[in-house]
Picture: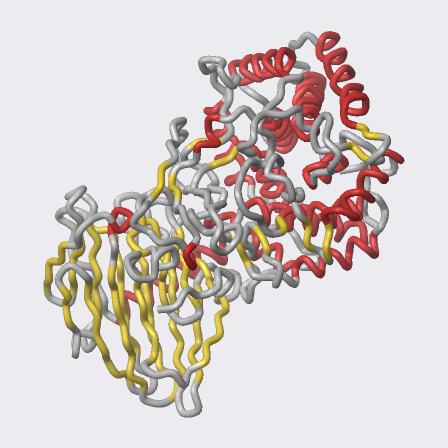
Length: 611
């Protein structure tokens, strides 16, 4: 195996986890059974030891194309040759309580007679466990040595077992032949005690397919977006749904870890957690698209996080585990060589213990949006919100690590200051909207003081811009959010000057860099990174809000052009437009939805009040 480009993947999932499927028919990344479980397939991080599940026609004469079945997360990979045509259908069933989690692979020959190669080589517990295999009738069970409860079963229909071999400690592989119109099925399950072997008949597998297809189509029908770029918005919504935990309501930033921001670099992080920063973007996107169940479920998860802690970093932390875990210790998996040699490969994320004051604004914006489009806050939730504002009142001038989670020491960041203003502003709005008790005069004085400090402490006459942090001589792309959160008028001369500086220093084509890392002091990390794709969509929406509609339209279309063949986006883009960082990234798809929604209304002349 060679390392495929990150963008040469589709994703499938079951609302508990996600698998990456390459265009060559290989599942080369899967944490199973949950988003944050150890990997069982991770060839994307180590092609030799990481584990994979391959199924493809034998030979090199085939080209491949991928698509999703319309309005679903069911992935179709077509293999084409002069004399044969094959379809590979991959999906995960949406399990009800008590049902096993299933990954289903279906091979179908449309034309010709085709020989297939297949291999299932799990590498359990981040490839740290020696693999144990137990053979049965038309199935094999895999287990490691660290946890006897973690077992996986691979089952197949009759005929696939021909020329099959079980390799102790390595997995199972085989070869089979299908005639025109014949099907073959492989089902990979999370096995539990006393569960019967799955029915691998044609009728049973086709029923799994029909039920999964019906689920996704019924879900996307709830979407009320009918504007331009409808297919891209729908695909982004389907991605966000896949990134949502059905059990807990939380949404992970990405289903992967260790994928590098630069090939060969060490900026390789674990994104399988829920960032509070994404909360307001998520609530805004889901509510605007009509997905009330998901927005309400996520809001319930957020409300559970509004609790008082020891006060070291305030009542909240930057990110949580999908169940609300607060301790996400970071360590290195030395057994993995990394994607194309990009090491170290880290799991956990030390940024959970950082001070990032902007999260209070993003959280209060989410609470405001949830109450604007949904139910009023319970008594205790509002009391907790008041405590958050009390913390902001005493902390808003502090230096912190900021939105980009830098590891070069704390600074007074512009974005953090702005979002502290947002926190107070949304609390005031909530109090007025719902007639809630609050020290409104005190909060209004605080809001005004923070507002004045932004222009006093961050405007630089020499740079002619609002700079990244106090005393800086550079701009930061997070400033693009200032008009989006209604802090500054998009017609304000100081904002237009800042936008001009961002365009000069951070924008190339539609690619926008978070900052320039020419100096190590910016983030304290070695090497470089690519452009940050979410910033490209923030930039497009900013331009539209600045009434530069034609330019915004072009930038948005150019940004869409960097998506992969399925409309999926990773965290960053390299100099050649290759995808870098964890994939797919929720924040990017959220920014896409927000920009599409605003720009469509702008182009249609349908803008009412600002935002």
